[in-house]
Length: 196
Image (cartoon, rainbow, N blue to C red; front, side, top):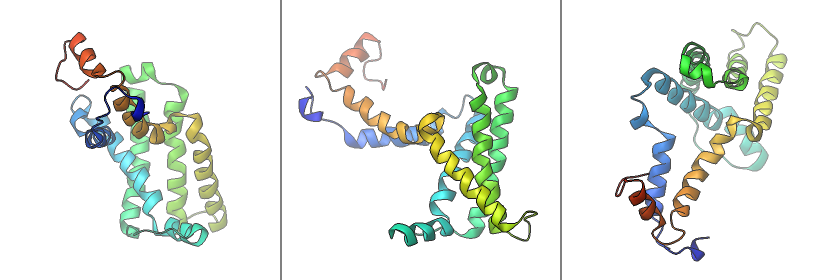
């Protein structure tokens, strides 16, 4: 695709920086501070725990031979509780904010709750003394709820975890067809020299 571009000078570092800014939207937090902070915290917790939990890494190592450093169980516990609490807060904030409520669908309320299920069940699996259910039942709920989320990724808003980084690259590349297209659009919009 880049070979056929009128402007072959793609600022890959700029694309990477723009992608990271969208992944960690610290500059955009000011408008709805509490909601943005809750969302950011939720995303960090639900990404870090599944990827860096020692038990998950051990399963991957035994299955496909890949491994990497794990977070401590204490940090995993804190992030797990954070994921569950922020999931509940996201649902409450969405339900109580008039502008969010007007745009929300059932899935906007259901997805945070569904995401919380593997975290709650995983926490109970890791802490059998706190688990009021049988270990095997809770492990089954944990695995099946996580599998259900994997199935839902391409069918729901969960797909943004894959699509968002790719969208940044495609968007930046699109500005290079034809040559100087991005600059010309910026001039037309009256935003010359500003990011669009």
